[in-house]
Image (cartoon, helix red, strand yellow):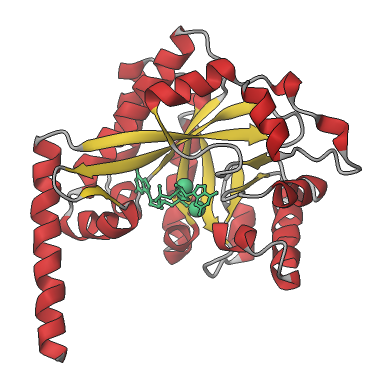
Length: 291
Ligand code: C2E
Ligand code: MG
Ligand code: MG
């Protein structure tokens, strides 16, 4: 059974890798955009760019399934570069349409970032798209950054030199060296979705989310919560001082035209802010802001 499983896994891997090469050639990749809100004002701050693979036979394949294969095969270099270019160009087009947003956040893989040409490739993308550096935010995972802290500190400094921002993604799931965290020139911490999912039901998770918010603020960083699905989660995070939020409660990741439509329709003034003691934003209130 063991060897049969191994063969199946190897076969699946080869099939995925072949599929990814095909996807690049046949333009099967898409970038979706998930709105991010300022929790204090309710304004849209921007979006996170999320890669989608629409396979002609199998439909949408999750990035969680194919990113590891793209990383092992090295294809992530080309795919990651494509996502970055798309995201920068789309953000410039939103700007040209006069839409209100501040930044676009792009996920980058450790494999991609470690490459010596990475900083130059970011610089090249900013220049060719015309996107102002302050509008670009790169999300790097905690696990990657903590693997080689000296190398990460120097890489982050080079990236910040370009004028862009950096967020640490999936924060709280890895093993952070707090001493290094103070030395990393990072702008934001993103609390991992797993803590947000249980923030209402689990007292420990609530304490962890609160501790991350305080940690980030004491290091002069902003804190983002992802995976907000319920009004009560949003109320609680806002009450604890979390700066930014995204999640299905606000909107799912959207294709570009739907994201543009969201930006056009969304009106933070229609959010019912002082509705509860914690100024809760409720689901109906978000729907109203979109009406
Ligand atoms: P991530 O960067 O932590 O992205 C957040 C994930 O949570 C996304 O999954 C998003 O669709 C999902 N999400 C957002 N709001 C909610 C919610 O309210 N509830 C739930 N249950 N989920 C929510 P997605 O798009 O499947 O991406 C998964 C991961 O794949 C990302 O995690 C990121 O690590 C990676 N990824 C996605 N796009 C890229 C990319 O362009 N490059 C790289 N290197 N990695 C990417
Ligand atoms: Mg992310
Ligand atoms: Mg995350």
